Image (cartoon, rainbow, N blue to C red; front, side, top):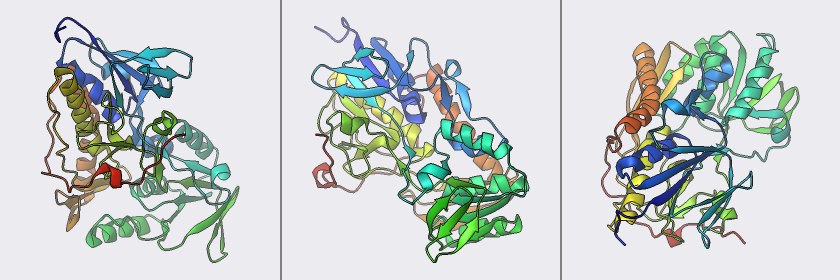
Length: 394
């Protein structure tokens, strides 16, 4: 049987930046039937969730404007990948057969171990929690004390959006304010936050969240009408639930071509992939290229050719500080920051262009599969996947 007289069934699990781009990229072959499984009927532009929460922007996009012709969107959630029968089981009871799976489930908010945080704090990593947070914020007066826990990009951007609206915000970092920034970049962010009334508690650690307060390690209690939790990310448990090997966080263990070390018909991408136990930084910047890489790996498996290994440079980051100011931290190809950044209105423009590019490259891939290009890093440090922490589902 030749490759041209059969159809190849590919199921993409997860319709985020990586999964949606991968689905479009697969259309480089005309004999591939592509099914995209996603729990929501609309694409969530996650890097804009802080804008959605504060009411300064939207964070959902119609899949009809993102997916290329012929891709079937199934609004459902996968509960298990059955490698023995090559099927994906869905919450609805539907079962999808596959020849290949692209595992693109993305990331979620980490489940906080801090007392009261799961009950009383609002995560912001997913659309549903962002909706609840936005609704609760709308009912609070502007002078109600708000606490944002987490000194990374999401925490900084959320605190900045709320402060620019005149709200009373405390940002608790639990360590260094965004340590991945250069020292000059951190000073710039800290100065902006201070100038806009944000109280930054850099080294303080929250040990308890109450309905109306947060408690610190030294016993201090600070009023908080609403607490937003942005510290840490997790991943869905689908891989482990399917008996596939994962790293300690739950990301699917793969080789350097993003192929599962357990089953060469499963390819992972985006935040939920751990190639050689050395995952790239979770970011929309990496997601598009990893989506294309995963699709290329599947296409190579179909064609019977050797798939390429990862070759992607993730360089620096962009942070918005409200709607008028931003920061672009410059970095080397290994993502280590240099002492140079672009701030002010130019930084804000770069951030906005970067956000638009994240969606724009998905649309371009829908129009012209295979069009995506990305910066290359050269070979990654070698480390066998077996040396990584492994969790195996029972």
